[in-house]
Amino acid sequence: NVRLENALLFINNTVNMTDATLDAVLAILEENIASSRQLEIENKLNTYQQLVAAWRCDIVTDFAGLAFFDNPTTPLLASYTVVISDVNSKVLVPLCLNRPDFERFVDFDFFNNSGILPPSNASFNQIRAGVARYTTAAFTHYFPDANESGVAPSDWTAASYRCVNLPPNLQFMYNFTA
Image (tube, rainbow, N blue to C red; front, top):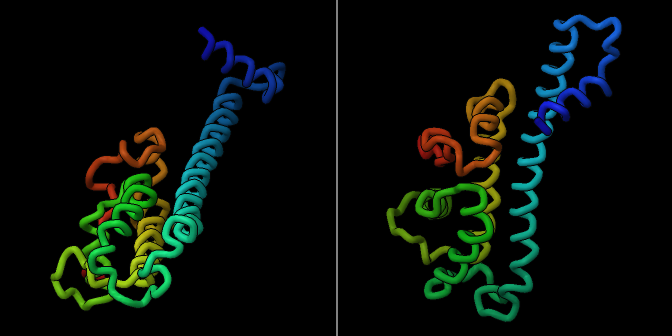
């Protein structure tokens, strides 16, 4: 009942009902719904971008004073687990990104697909650059331009604008053949 009352209130506030036909009212509602959905998708992209930016800012306070932070071009080795756990919890999981796929991406991008996984020989700078490039590719998939393939607006709507609700075939996985 409340939802119906809200819909009627919205119609009364946005449409002059005295001269409007039902088709005109429906057209206005469809336009408003489409605009609302587009804003929801843009908000999702902004939220995802802010998560990545927050991680980049947080690493200063999270890792300052640690050897790999003070010398970010040396291999992480034993510190790899600490760094990848942080990336996973603050970036990959919230963006519905796959940790093994990200690790394979780092190996592919920086070590010519050596096959050594996890890539604990990566440096802190390589992990940071990997996060930037990998999430950029994910954003292109999740929020493609009109002429690109990826998650369509209707897919986001069906998933209630939550990446965890996207079907597996729409979850981002890096295309290693491109």
